[in-house]
Amino acid sequence: MGASTLPVGLGMVRPGGAYVSIPTLTDDGDIEASFAAAAARQVRRVFSTMSDVGCGRQLATIAGLITDGHVTLPPMQTLPLEQAAEAHVLIQTRHVRGKIVLNVAEF
Image 1 (tube, helix red, strand yellow):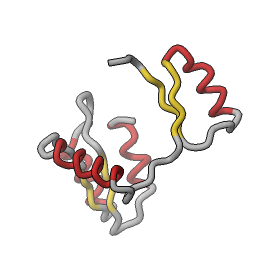
Image 2 (spheres, rainbow, N blue to C red):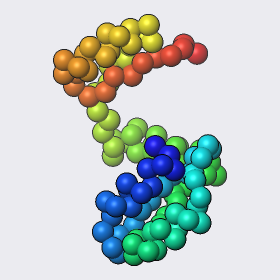
Image 3 (spheres, helix red, strand yellow):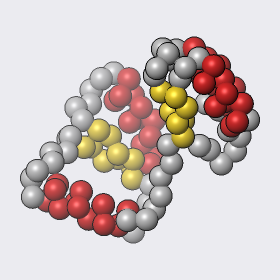
Image 4 (tube, rainbow, N blue to C red):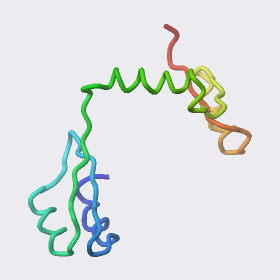
């Protein structure tokens, strides 16, 4: 994705709707022009950003919800990174229930 997808995306939003983008570190194009193009179609242009402020607290809350059983995780199958090809075959043949996690390194 990138700045070049703006015209296509705007064309998919009805007047009165919102077009939301997640800014990148590379090229978001002419932001002022993207707001003008959206306004011309009566579409609200929104950039969604995130911050690491408070992430530790949020992760602790999520971990607590999982530990207390308020959130149920899908079944997970962990494979070493060296078995990534096998993991891909499992996904393609739909012999997976839940998620496959590739273990990149042991700590």
